[in-house]
Image (cartoon, rainbow, N blue to C red; front, side):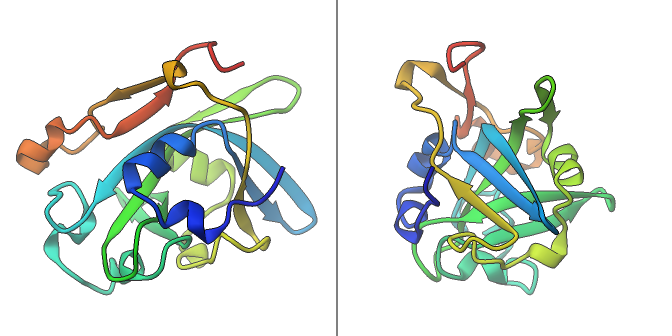
Length: 181
């Protein structure tokens, strides 16, 4: 497995969101390494995407979205859960991919279904916001399983009813059941 380079994240956000499926999200906590297979993502693209945090413009919260690609954007929802995103495309253009679900290999597969649960399980919080994920430090992504296009399903993003017409975008990507094992 090799770590994904900045060029991977510097591409079209929808392509990055699809291509992250099957990759390994790697978390280093002390001397322990946890590898999780990414099974669900959502794309958020630019200030015109009403579901994107940057739709309100550049703020201290969204500043990291305007940085170069390959950085972690981590924020808190409901005052208790963190969400992990990867900044994509080019500098000064706010776009990112939310990691919604992973499967962790242990004695049995454990599914952390939901962005808050996976961050809690992997101990990801705002201390990692802005981290360069193209370096092998506390959090990075490695190449993973070969995923065929037919194994990917797209659908509407979750929890964005406020986003008017943007809630209809089919920018959530998941691995189809069992086709990827």
